[in-house]
Image (cartoon, rainbow, N blue to C red; front, side):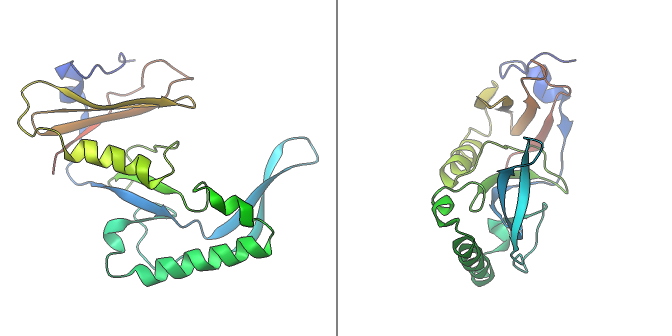
Length: 191
């Protein structure tokens, strides 16, 4: 198992798996259903479906996620989806739950190819996604020394992003399960 990737360690960025085609964007949650959590008869929490809300007819590069690049000029369908979600939540008595972005209005950070390269499961807001996107977009492309862009740990998940010579390296893992990630991560060319 590799050590925790040190942003100053060039071997981490060099040994990460290169990803040629990727998207780095913010994505809107479009789960297509309204659910809540209740205590089951066995004392465990269980998810309960309250209403189906048909997702918008927009591309989903990841399951239940529409990235901003795919809604430019096509926001009407996304707005209609969220209006239907608000109506369903109001009818189910969950109007107060709509005040927070999670889970219904979650804006997730998306770094992906045909699969997510990282989950960023604790990022739920536009501000959180934007912070990372600005860090990735704003580093020096010709930096001769590795530069840490993000090192974040929350609710057991840890992500580290660093850049060096026009490449961005990313690794994410469950820090509560193991202090070091199972892989060296992935890297991709900066835009």
